[in-house]
Image: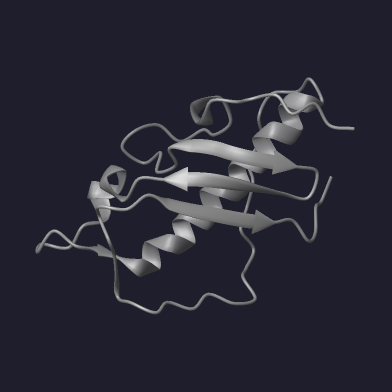
Length: 115
């Protein structure tokens, strides 16, 4: 059984503000993780009109994978290591921009891990 310890997001990733785009870990287990994103924390990606393109979701997924990798490293008593998004089977967007007034939940599921 995995210890359901609560981790701060900055303990799990090498990213620092303003490139740390995740707000918090909502939940995790041995196969995946849910994180919360506040779109307002992604100002580096805003268009000149002040909108956040939905393709930034790929970076949210990549950072979520890095956070899960960080949890696995911490559970093993090792320093955090890099996590990589090698691809996605499906990334569909239904609107061109994220709503800046709503928090987002990003859910990732690990399929392959290279030790």
